[in-house]
Length: 102
Image (cartoon, rainbow, N blue to C red):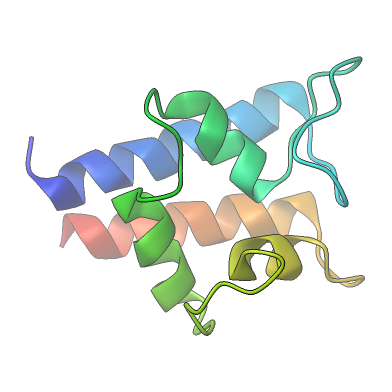
């Protein structure tokens, strides 16, 4: 599997994970409910952690975010925006996966 296909699979699996377990803001994961944020979803489907994950790089680019990490990863800031919804996150994962598969 090439890197783009692997990253696309991670994003599709992460979208499915949110659909099954729920989505949250302000934390990586809610251990009581299993709900996760965007980074938490990727973290739960990637065995080696998400820090250098190609899926994360592709999602950051798809969303037009500054890839320079600060205190919070740019995806965490995007996830936690007041107007953000679970549907926004799932759709962003799926659209980025589609771009990677082209």
